[in-house]
Image 1 (cartoon, helix red, strand yellow):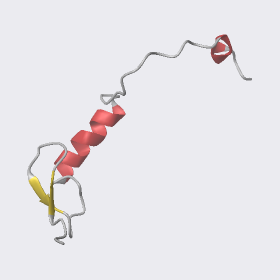
Image 2: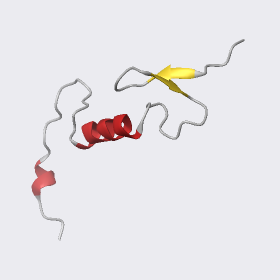
Image 3: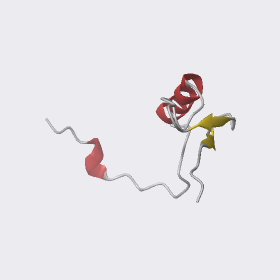
Length: 62
């Protein structure tokens, strides 16, 4: 059995080492930060129908 030594970076698809890579599974800090920015700006979405809003969601809880 052969252990996996490298993976493809989820952002740029370059081969990246697993061992000793502080940014894994990304190849670099740049690719890691681009991915984080996509999450933060809600660029990744799971397809599905929107949930109806509940009227109590708009009330002040104060």
